[in-house]
Image 1 (cartoon, rainbow, N blue to C red):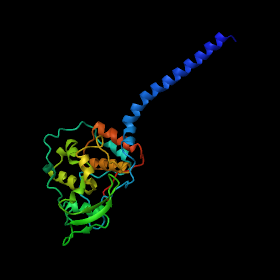
Image 2: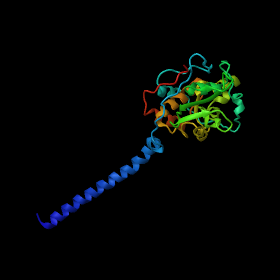
Image 3: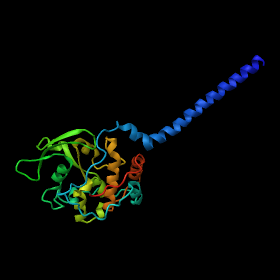
Image 4: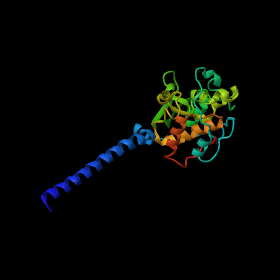
Length: 265
């Protein structure tokens, strides 16, 4: 074999290697953005949580379920999501919190307002304020949205550290069908234990009226339950999901295909 032929073959080999590297780079450039905007952004956004992966709905003996528009469907949360209508959001310009009734009513008629019911349910060993059988004075719990251990103490400057979050925010409910509910049905939605969780105050502020497409709990361990609970609430009150919201929910449930809906029991 002449030196010229050897040089030619060596050059051909190097050329093929260079093209292979270039092709791999182009493939990565195409695949990585798709991965990021489907799964990657949720995997990279926050560290994996160490907090709880679920939250209670009712406490036996002193909490009663609230009458929703329809029963929460049992079974797989992804199937329940597929059954929800998908529509663009309605306008929110005429939204007013008062459309959902006075805050923290005693809808289940157990003698205590909803906020204190949820604090009592979610804070193990919570103690009542002096002279009260309803008002929670203090308690410690592992907060689900951040996974941190938080202590609640009633007071003008400290009560805000633990807030009661509407899992389906009332603003989101308003733009996805709650405008069509009756005043009583909206009151029930705002006070239904299925739709309420005691959480870190700052996390609740960060969420605002966002749906799953715009905000998810930093504690990734809780996201499957959180999304399943949103689906359960929307099914119970005849609300719809937006296309972006459904996509976000499907991505979360893709990591937990056996996640069930959350039933009010």
